[in-house]
Image 1: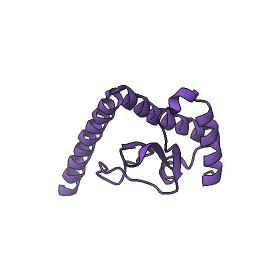
Image 2 (image 1 turned 135 degrees about the horizontal axis):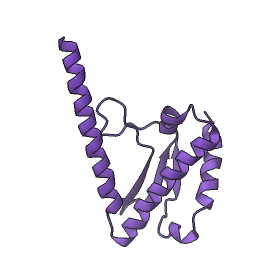
Image 3 (image 1 turned 90 degrees about the horizontal axis):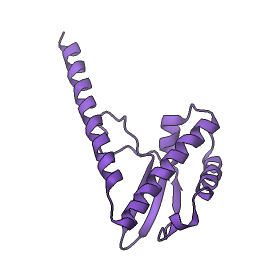
Image 4 (image 1 turned 120 degrees about the vertical axis):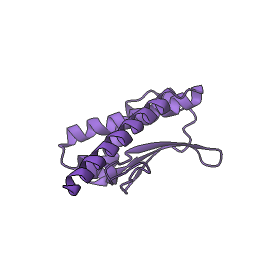
Length: 135
């Protein structure tokens, strides 16, 4: 796994790929935090949050990327593949930002749909596990 410093350099490169107008009102910028963040939706400690878009009246608008989550999920990948995952996450969070500016929620709806699928699959896995244990 690359170091957090290497990931910060990678993130800076990826951020520079995006048009300047994408940064409108992103007053808090992009933060890379060292921790891994389990999603509050995680049912079996198996769902990590890679990044988040934040908007509040007091803190403004900013994007958070979690180095530890990338390390947990993609630490085994070569740097170029890790960079592709980071690019996808960064663009996902920027989509949230741009939709927020436009008053849209399409990606939030899609994220919720994916969480519903995750919960459904986890529920099935738990039932199967319980059946195996009952035997």
